[in-house]
Length: 156
Image 1 (cartoon, one colour):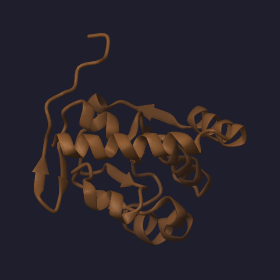
Image 2: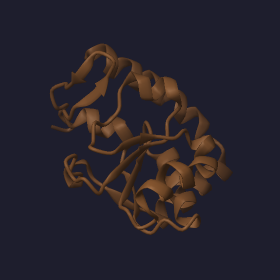
Image 3: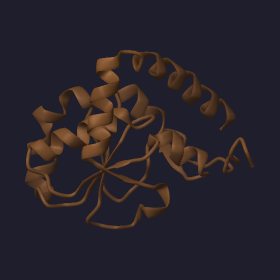
Image 4: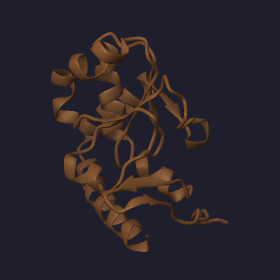
């Protein structure tokens, strides 16, 4: 599991470089202001009405996803084209949705787009799947259910 942490952290640093653009930073800040964040502790994986929407790319999803009762994957770049078929038709536009990505920004952008498409109960996982893993919560991938020990904060 330490290898998974290492790979996620390395990819996270790569994502940080993308945040250098001031315009992009402003866009992310706008999205974060428009979407209610949700903490790991507030997610009930057994809630049958909740959709966990992973907006990462397919290879990221394959590395591990949050195992809710209704976990969907729609890459951020395809969201607007697939949201009606994969979410609205089977679940409705009022179903609770929590978006997530690796660290949070793509999830926030996706949540804003879902709101613009008429979805009414959209929130974004604060800190993305990295925060989930750091909290010692399980993820699922081709190896099965994986769970690491909760990481302590740098100050504690």
